[in-house]
Length: 167
Image (cartoon, rainbow, N blue to C red):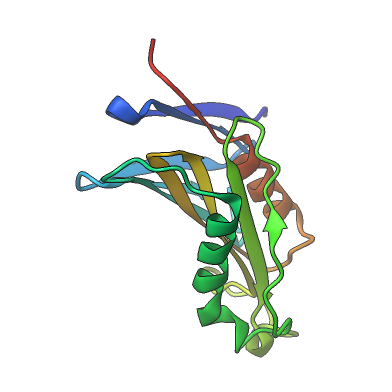
């Protein structure tokens, strides 16, 4: 089975594209007039989930790398206290299709050494991708192991995300 390319028409904002890991399910749901929620779910009993909340800016404006990082640090506040890491460390997505994105990773200290339970994740990555002046995505990556194949697959999928303008 080969990874598949999925696209989503964002109307005036272009076309969202992503390479979905092989065997994973892609789904998208419109969120009123403000954007879309895109979910990537693994096959079988793998315990992971990737959610990208794509949002349209009401007023397009340039967003700096520093502003994106500040947003990620603010999103991270809710996870740092209960984490093994106890600090926020910015990591950059390897976005190939334009834009800038970064994230932080947190391991839930209460879940360390516990058996895996479906839809209860031992770690989470939270981030933001700024695709353009009028389009961004809040990203959640949930899994049991940061070094596991499911987390690596989600990182690769998010990094493959692109926005192309309609011709």
